[in-house]
Length: 256
Image: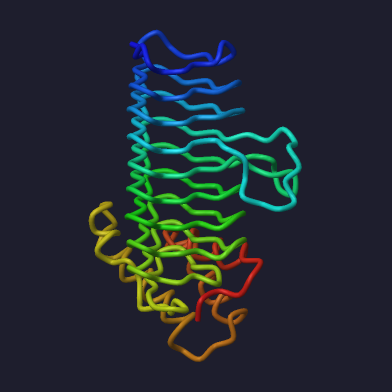
C-alpha cells in the first residue's frame, strides 16, 4: 500500500492497510492508524500521531515545526484523532514548549483546502473549516464549530461549541458557544439556529438559548449580571451549560 516513490522513515509506524501515495514523505516518529489514506506529495513530520480512517489529500504539510520565533527545536508533538478529512495544501504545526507542547485535532473534522492550524491549537470534534480558515497559535475550537471561508482567529482566542464564524470574519476575542459572528472585527449577530436545528436541538431548547443570548447581548446588563441570570435557569434548561461555561472560561474579552 506504499507507492514506490514515497519516502518513509524507518522509525515511522503504520497499520498494514494504510495507503501512502506517490512522492509523499513520512518522517521520523510518525504513527499512522488503520484505514488512513495519505495521497501524493504529502509531507508528515513527527512527533505526530494520526488515528484511524483519516484521509489527507495531496500537498498537505502535517506536523512540521511551529511557526514561532521562540521555537528552538525542542521536542513537541501533533495528535490527530479519527475520521478526519484534511484537504489540499493544509498546514498543521506541532506545539511549543510555551504551551502544552501539543497541537491536538479531535475526530470527524472536515478541514478544507488551504486551512492553517498553528502551534498549540486544540480543535474539538465534528468541526467544519472552510477554505483558507486560519487559526493562530493557542486557539481553542469547540465541538461542532463552523468556520466560514477566509475566517481568521487571533492567538489565544476560544471559540465555543456550536458557534458559527461568518465568511471573512476576523476574530480577536472569545466567541461564546452557540453564537454566530461576522465582520472585521467580528460582532455577534445572533445564535447559530440553523446549525442547532440540524443537530436535533428542539424548538424549546433553541428558544432557551436565544433568551440566554439576549440576556448577554440585548438587555444592557453587565456580563456578571447576565451570567447570574443564565445560571439560574440551568436546572430546567441544561442546554445553557455550554453557553455559560464558555463565558466563565473566557480569559480574553468576549465578542460584544
